Image (tube, rainbow, N blue to C red; front, side, top):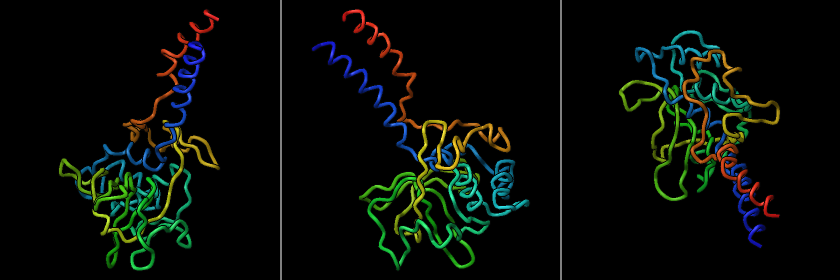
Length: 229
């Protein structure tokens, strides 16, 4: 019986490592990896910003929140029709889960969802990191936004739910540092990026427990069980 229990615990923890590895969406993982990005002179410039803008075929300094969202979605292999304007997203409003005045705001919004604030002539967008069922605020990551050090860049912060005007559902499963879609593997990897310099922070998930961490103590336990049998 003791051997059976030990084997069960080892396998449960091993399988648990696989289970929690898909807790984070590719969109959020890729967006988090760019939290170091800052504009060079606070004029929509800098090498990373230029790379984001190229994702929507813009080759001069310009507002780039939509370009950042497009770059993230491209990295995850997700379909979209993002342009340089922050009001565009999805063909035929595919994936629309909230439209202020038309669709009721859901209590639960999946991480990786794309949010929009709209105003005459433009707007702003970014990705939902966490949307608590209760409370007035949600956590977001977006580009072309103010950061804690006073520069424009990519930042993670809180925002009021009531200010959101549109929400689109995006969720591409992410396994650790490799994100998989139905069309291609490892859509986000340094090897596939235009410039490796933009990848300063590896994609990671604080809730993920890689297999290697478990093998440190699981293998000796399995060997002990085998020797006693």
